[in-house]
Image 1 (cartoon, protein in one colour):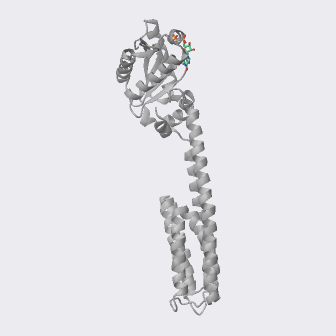
Image 2 (cartoon, helix red, strand yellow):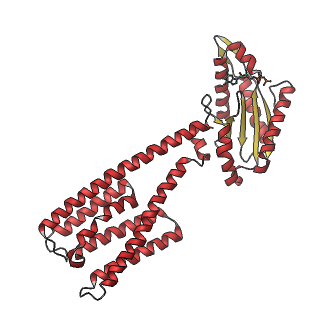
Length: 354
Ligand SMILES: Nc1nc2c(ncn2[C@@H]2O[C@H](COP(=O)(O)OP(=O)(O)OP(=O)(O)O)[C@@H](O)[C@H]2O)c(=O)[nH]1
């Protein structure tokens, strides 16, 4: 089983890191939807009787749109969609507010929280693009004469854009390095997990992988795996081989048999080195009869393979035991049975399957 495939079965720390990151976005979404809309409703109701009804209306419509978006999110659970809609609403609100000027022309003060919110909702790249577009649109509203309803002082306009760009830059630097460190930690954790689950000599999965990861997958998705065939395999007279040709030659044989497994197993099959010269093959959705055929192919291929040690050619054989498990509860018994069958093959003279 190669590393890529191994990670497919792992409910590992990478999933956990992604889960934590999506919780971060979820909380920002909830914060913007509930807290910001509450503030907007308060200001909208406070100014219901104002001479100009546009601002209370904008606040009321935006707050309601935030709440509708979060309600839809609770219904369909699509975080990306909800964050994208929220970001569009945020941008539209900021543009609208600056356009009309807000209460006593205070709109510009309210713009500053939103670059950080966009970074939280959209991730570094998309947030940077959105912030640049938003700032450009704000600059057009501010600097094109008589375009906006509101009138801002000249000095105020340029200082606002400058300080907004500083805020965006600071948010971008912060988010960029936060994302980088998050990715580096994720990768490190993933590599450590793979190392812990992999036999370094053959690159096959190890016993820990079966106990820590595979059992969890079997438990979560039994229909994907069962009935599961189990093949126990043990290289014959490996001690003699080590004694005769040296430990290094023995290591080469272990690598050769690992490659034979890779060549004859399907992508969904799992080959595991459980001990020195012992292996366990787990074949999802496979009957005992088919597992016998697979074991026979591996047995033949190994026994026919010519190996070389300091100019001396030799061959190696292995013995096999096969069993089948209909469900997870039967798996320990099936593994024990495959082991017993393997030792029957050894007793019967080795290089065979039982
Ligand atoms: N080269 C090498 N040898 C190993 C490794 N791990 C275990 N061994 C050797 O494998 C041998 C296993 O020997 P035994 O358990 O007696 O089995 P066997 O000689 O294969 O005999 P049968 O199983 O009865 O056919 C021991 O000599 C171990 O030292 C390894 O990683 N590399």
